[in-house]
Image (tube, rainbow, N blue to C red; front, side):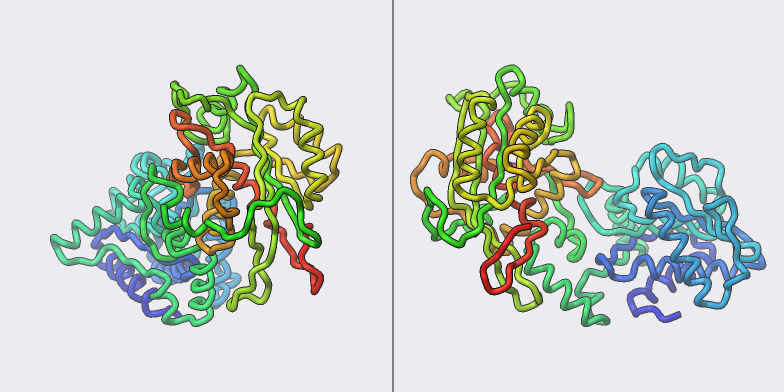
Length: 474
């Protein structure tokens, strides 16, 4: 089997534990695209081969059946074909691959899955263990190998200190200190890059694009855990956002502009909207406090952020990346949406915005529909869900860290002060399912400027530079 040195290290340790009935539990962190799944499939082929006469069960669980469990099964079949077992192994009941008397059983760790009754006597594998429920594992999967002293392997990438993988990892490190037996194996992107130069170049590019401190780079490549509840943006990141260009009142010729619109809640609906943002009532997630800030700014605002889109060429990329220069803000407080329609349309036409991202969550939906009717397909409704907001937050951080988001020069305006206030007080919350939330706690203020800014990031996802004549947003 052609495995890299770090893969061979784990394979040998696992096979030794299996063959000598040591019953060790391993935790394995391999950087994203570092060959974790290939290693798992090779291990499965080897063990099925060793036990095809004797018989036994190898069990592998994944956080979801579709697509993760299905992909694992397909990968094992491909490796079995590669090693000449085509036509010898067969599938049973849609989730079991049998080679002789040995079987690989693939199960889902979803909360609704029924897995009780299976026994693992060769190996128990937990794939993406950081996404598997501790309770599900403890009650339903761990007992599968209790009567056989089965060897167990937890694969994954780090996230925070609340995950199953982190819990197993810390237990293993403590056991290592006591008996010297290596149970935790960690291979970050630099270890993988020693054996794959193309991988090294790619990850170095991601390091520049995302920033070394970006949550996804830290966890997926550097294998460093994150901690929730802290600030969304550091002081250094906010400083990095400071631009040198002037705020504009009118568009400049030949420039391309986009807009992000965060809509205010209206009267009795305002607290409901803010609750929706917390994901406690609906899906737009940030914490909700029972006491609003009492400083005269307790009312939510409708905010429009206008940005100029340019392109930044990077040495490691063949195409230009979008860069945003915020050039103007508009804010209305305490004014019903219906009264703002003419002003909003006039502003968007004035700037000839090529794309307009509108918060269409809850009461924002009719506003988004009206604007789309008036301005056409350039208006893109955006609905906040746990995943969509998380993706937006991660992408916003990548723009900030790579210097691709710049604010106009400090002008002493109330809009600029409120924007800075929200950026400084924005919090981050990281969840076990590898999603994040960013928000301003309602006891401190609002996040309307922050969300309007973040919506701009969605507007440049499909950015394509126009050849020789500037740039366009589809």
